[in-house]
Length: 330
Image (cartoon, rainbow, N blue to C red; front, side):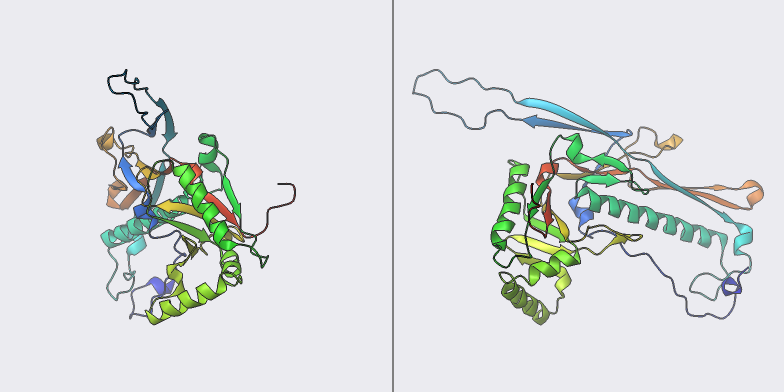
């Protein structure tokens, strides 16, 4: 056994943790809905007439017409993770960050927390990609393409930030218009745009934006805040997202993705119960963890799972922004 893990006088404990994936506000953005099955159904009701015409006093009133009902069903992905803690693994080993000897139960708790952290990172990544209209698996395979499922084309606005005469305010308004059209009658409170560093830099140095950005940046510094809070311009809040999965950025170069906040029915997370005897047909919890004793009490087998699917019910309200001009022939 590596001597660094043997019981000895405490040395500096350094742990290299992976970069956090996702916007912390995403947990609040995606409203959790617990179910009792492995699938999640969404029913839509579209009114075919909203305005009521006036009628002459004493005349015949128009008949109310019913709207159109449609439904979509989504399979909730199963995400389990297992590990083992052997009694022999902790013999003569100090607890992390302590001079005391490690215990089997302490190691179990550490392993459970480590597995939960990996699930949290996966869910955060899926929420980040959901705001782009897609859910990807760990190997990059597509789990759900919301644009394809709802039969809509991805909305795109080319900002043409390389041209000094570009009316950037008008481009921002184009994004707002597309999102409002995609939302229909649903209200929202604000619009955020997660962009990569290349897009952000091109935006903030553009001659029609630079003066506003410098004034905002100076005000943020006086208030003791950093520029990471998000630059607001033209009714949009631009936030740099530099997160990566391995070497692959969550946001592609010179692009970004706009989405509304404060909605009720656009973003949600569907939860399914664990496949344990005691949880069948029960209301789902966000996480599940179990342990079992190995033969002859020689350790524990550990099982953690989360069955969650971030859902975008109105993918037409998502807009991709690109820093370049519209490609020729588009």
